[in-house]
Image 1 (cartoon, one colour):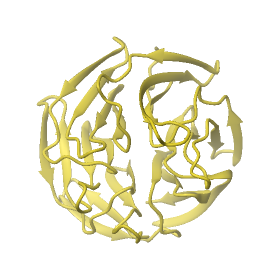
Image 2 (cartoon, rainbow, N blue to C red):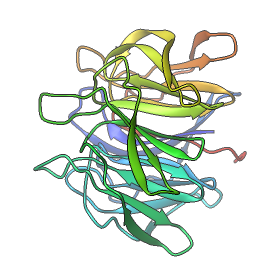
Image 3 (spheres, one colour):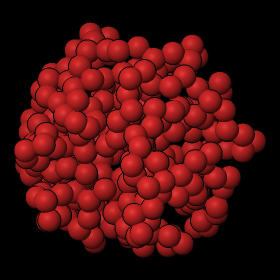
Image 4 (cartoon, rainbow, N blue to C red):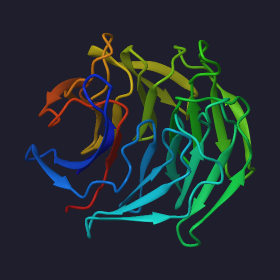
Length: 281
């Protein structure tokens, strides 16, 4: 089940608070409870233990919300230590990690870790390079922060890797692009990255520390959702080269290398939350 949360409308003028879910098998969209008071964009979203978490967002929000799908209910949890937007959040080993972002003045190197059992955020080692609008994924017990913006007009191709055991960051092989507004998702030991108006879905394999092209997209997008569902990498919505949001969804199957267009969103969206929940709801 893919959940789509909030984001910007077709022309980017309105911030939305809708929550909807898609059953990829049946192609059916249904509504879920809208996030209360959260008509924001450029927040971060991820799944942890079949619940959905939302953090930050414009402008400089420190709010964190948890969605309980089985009860169709949002609850507020402990907020971030530092407000931010254009950051990313991911789950790893039962914890949430919030990485980087922007506070209206500068890119952030700050990284926070959340324990759902303690309802508490703690700081861990800072990024080597402060970035916003980067891609983030966890793979094989480590975090990978890919690309992103280092200033208003400059992006980076550096990839930063965090080891929670040593609480240290290091650089691994740079990506074959230098973009912002990108997203990443992990599937079968590899990390897939797209967005940033890239032509392709790229694949990074930590085991070999190597990059490759996985698929070519029919449309260049930024601010798209990227999630894994039923063994496929799903590219959900986003904004095209004309700065107009789209309602299209594509699914890439790494096994056969095919990219297929799926049933579209119910509205054109960009810079939204996009999360897969594994249980049948």
